[in-house]
Amino acid sequence: MPATAPEVHTDLVLEPRDVKFDWSRLPLHWIPDEPVATHTINVLHLLLPEGERWFTEVFKDALPLITDEQLREEVLGFIGQEAIHAEAHQEVLDHLLGQGLDPRPYVRQIAWLFQRILGEKPRLSPRKRRENVIERVAFVAAIEHFTAFLGNWALNSPGLDRADADPTMLDLLRWHGAEEVEHRSVAYDLLVHLDSGYGRRVRGMLVGGPLLVHLWVRGLRYLLAADPELRGTLRPSWRQAWEISRRGLLPDPVQSLRSGLRYLRPGYHPTQEGDSGQALAYLAASPAARAAAAR
Ligand SMILES: [Fe+2]
Ligand SMILES: [Fe+2]
Image (cartoon, rainbow, N blue to C red; front, side, top):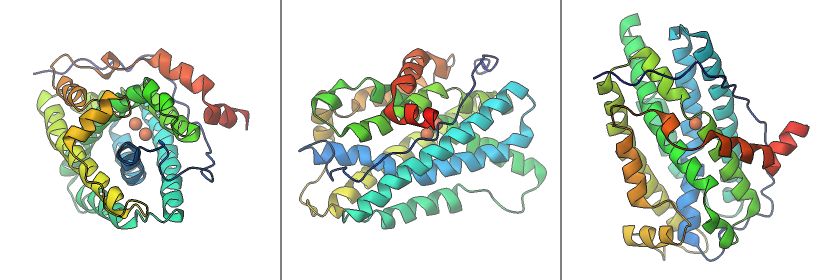
């Protein structure tokens, strides 16, 4: 079944914004009195530094296979943005360590997964190497569907403001979320450019979707156990996630699942999800992005 033709010939110009955040005043539970919501979102900081560095490696490996100049420019812009995202989340991890929550054992497992299991395989023939790169691009495209979904949620989450969440963390989440919405088509368009087959897209989601859920649940359990104030007294449950999402502090699990299923629709394209205008409006107002533009 053919995939939708990629809409790469737009005037999308992806600009890496070299943001800086000051975490020195970030409370351990940056959504006050909401440790489960705080740590569910904190799982992003556990996964993204290794995950987004891996995205940039996959896309660098894919560059020699690209024959479309506009798409090549978008892929280079994507690499620039994801590299900065990874470092921004890494700084939060360093701050957590300073607060007595050691994320390193979990992050070591994530590093092993991305570098050893999903990393570049040595000594492949040119044909197998191309196959391997495309397979990894399919995985990135599936995950990028979720990062755009989460980014769109972050941009439309007044519940976090009502709960008095830390404004610097909100800016990180919304700046990153806005860039995810901004570049949401790049991985998918790259995948279709390299292989327009429906099977490859489905395989990327069937591996990427369940793996992401699994890593998120494990990451949340890890953070709740390692939190020096909680010391394992809280155990997460799906019922609790549902209840917290109803208060607008987390994405709705059912909506998240539906979003994953939309990716499997034959006529899917990432531009059907999220709003580029809203993302660019946030980037024009984001304190961190404005400071970066002024430097
Ligand atoms: Fe990102
Ligand atoms: Fe992304």
